[in-house]
Image (cartoon, rainbow, N blue to C red; front, top):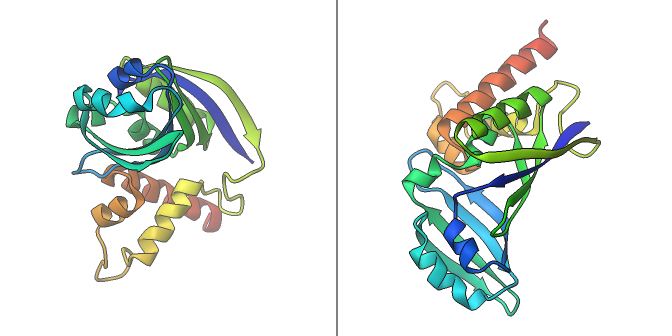
Length: 213
């Protein structure tokens, strides 16, 4: 049993682009964040005047660079790198810090809507308060339980904690000679070093509480 949150927010990312093509919807395909590199966003653009997208992205102040990876008759796949300043404004970083996983994200010129898996109500509350503290207009529209995915009841691990522990183990992080660094593993997972360290710490604590106490 896990919690699913439906969230809406007003994001400064690609705001100018969305305003230039108001009938276009942007659907997240992937989001890649590494500690020392640019934030890369892969998305499908659907509907509206797709012919105006390149020009809009070129002058968008939040976009450092972009590439159209696939162009179909009714949609296009883009990869965008955001400016360094915008990386700090991304709500994804705050979600990752609280083990919240974005399952789906769609944006228009009006709002960005996110469906996310949430480990606890406390984690969601901290995420919301952090985002609102940054001046981001974020609202939780609904919160419900689902039997699909979520925590691992035998140990109480969340999916992000389990994935982090497995990735670190497979990379040899726990071996005496440290086959990989936190930065290496974080890059493979597409999260920051700090987020990975937090997941490992919380995962270890939960495993100890579930098996040794």
